[in-house]
View 1: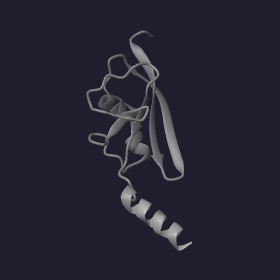
View 2: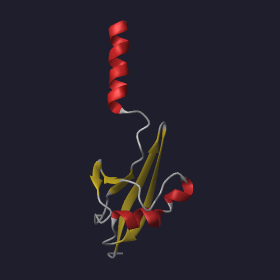
View 3: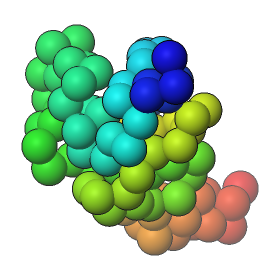
Length: 96
């Protein structure tokens, strides 16, 4: 159907990733697609109404209009502060 587009919705956890393929109405926004995917039923920790989103590694706003073939990514908070992880790695190398 020309009035639908095929997209993927992706969510990753440490050591696991889930990618859902679905069709959404043409002109759907990023936020609407997350809600339509019902991915929060698989991962209850996702707040589908406010989680940060991206397309192919680039952050997008809720009102971003998806295109056919887009991979919509749901981002989660980092478990480690990147600067702290870098400091710890450096101190380990200095001691070795």
